[in-house]
Length: 276
Image 1 (cartoon, rainbow, N blue to C red):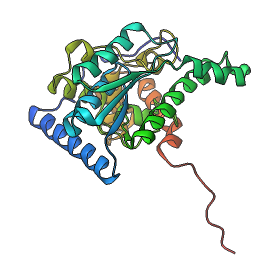
Image 2 (image 1 turned 60 degrees about the vertical axis):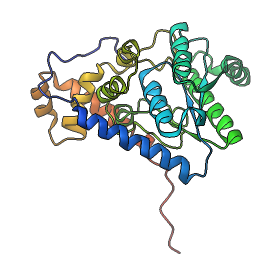
Image 3 (image 1 turned 90 degrees about the vertical axis):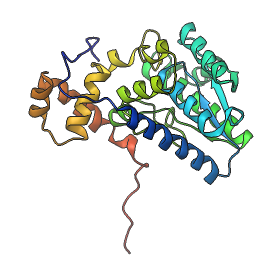
């Protein structure tokens, strides 16, 4: 993947939500979280805290929906996580006054490497092991405490497959799953998330120095615009490129991400039923 990040010169469309729309999303999401927990007969929710904006917003809304006593946070650092992000994750938990545990996942990852040393040099495979390890821990705690696992994925990630299958999307629900990244930032600011967390560059931290935008090759603002106009919207590749004043290759890149990740948005396939 290219290190060059495509960015819009100036977006000709406004993806922002009004205050009334933000209030509506806030109420809708908190009611959703409350209903999912109630329908599951659960005692609350578990959420993995990364220090990023998605988990931070989800945690805020979960506390608003369920109360601080019903939300359990997990901070799960590895050797590739920055100290700043892990400090931010703990800061979020303390700011919300929720119980949280810090679990170093690297010894668990080392056990996987010991079991299959041939994979140690595959950066993506090893990064996915870290993400899936966190998913297992989320469910270990959730099962033991009769809770559900809250996902933190947004619509931009879902449509481009920017998540690990059976990892960060091994969850019971995605409260912010219908919001594009720009709208996540907006809603986060609206509910009182500190500005430094709202504006922090997103990173899955699957390896040292990774950022979402560098890996995808385009900024989230541009990605969101292409998704709204082209993937979710009616415009063709050429019309989208013309509207956004970008090269068609940018739109084709998003198309590629969308098509390549189609399998992630469905249950594992099985053969058609056999008629005998």
